[in-house]
Length: 165
Image 1: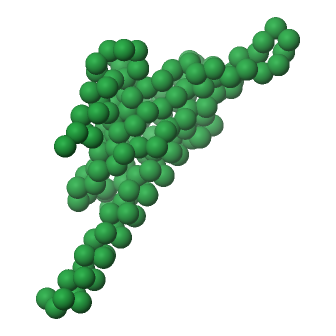
Image 2: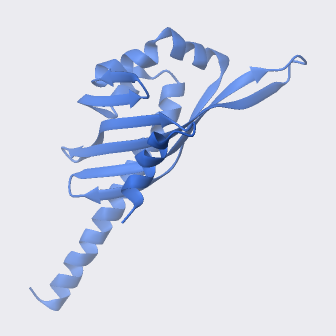
């Protein structure tokens, strides 16, 4: 391989990594608007068919279970009252067709005051660990693990572990 071919190959690899990181960031950031819209099929499509979503002790096993959560009465109640699932920026590490992303998310809910003026409050702050797989050229969630940031070590280990060298 010539020097020019080697440089081109290195540039292509760097570009692919940037494209992968951007696609993964877009997937993660799309979760909030989709789940807040009640788009159960679109939210489920972010996961592999056998993907897992674990929120503290609540386990959704499979994309169909994720869709069911979006349709559930508790989640529909959040939507009806006004909510925003905000996914903060994630630190993404890509390894071929596998990736890990870690970061934080907030659940913001609408609360009416006695005067009727709107108020918004953070109802939940969560640490998130996303394991992703590229399937047929598209990144999908293999497993999302979320832990309430409540002072317990589990939430910090979930996000800090992958960041440590």
